[in-house]
Length: 405
Image (cartoon, rainbow, N blue to C red; front, side):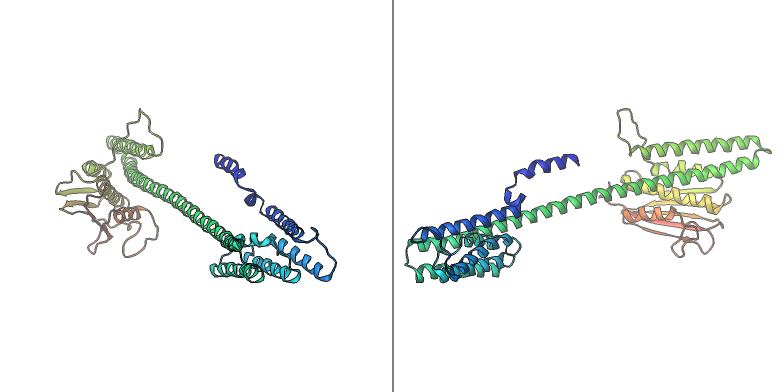
């Protein structure tokens, strides 16, 4: 931020005085124009001076003053200022046969540079051209200078118009660049938010599953601690194993948030190859789980492979938490040519999971929500709800496409 501010401070002095001090510059231009007008009149007089003797002379001098110092508003009201300058030039010329006011040169440029309405700008230029042509060709003697003066009117207005178009073009480019920068920043923020959501979902899956196993095993150890110390020790060993695995998976997930070093050896993400180990862990917690795999699950895209594992993991976590240790669960993973069909069905009669397709839960959680987000991102379908015969079923269908990384 400081570097950008310093850069702006370096470049700002390179702007001209008309941009850095617009009001002061306009005051200088108005004073200079008035001085040049008086100089033009004095050189055109017979005695080389300016006389203010009659009321007409006072009116002419006042018209010249108003016409020149109207340039102070040439940026905000270019059309009105040009009309005032043109009227002052006509009145001073016809009133005392002077040479008009010099401010017409600046008002023509301002008309082209600052006028928003193209028609008003063009009409103002044509009015000035008509007056100059009338003055030089009708009231005066036609000459080469007359043609040059008419061309000067067109040139001043055209230069102002080209400068305006150039400024508008640069402004559009700046706005487009700013919009692209905002879009880039918003895209980066969305990417960060999506990554945080993904990591939070992964952490939920890991922690919820492993803690459910640890809770069940610890409860079993407490129950049989007095009657069967060996079984209690085995249960606590399972708790220790589940805790270590949870820590390992959490280190892997949190490792993506830290810069990697040469000594970092991150563990691979779990996948379908780990389903047997997952089912074995759940069996140790109490429920009977049967795993059925049809088709070749090797070579699946990484995102799809991880999603299958997480869906089965979360569904089995719900079995542990809600169906009870006496429940029986069946995990079916079937791969066809273009999709993978996943079914996790249990026979429990406990509390329903966090939410179903048919009715919202009274205690909302993140399990089915996380599964549904995974399935939606992969373009699949998820149906979860209680069975008529009792129990609960999670059914997901994930397409197998080459676009998945």
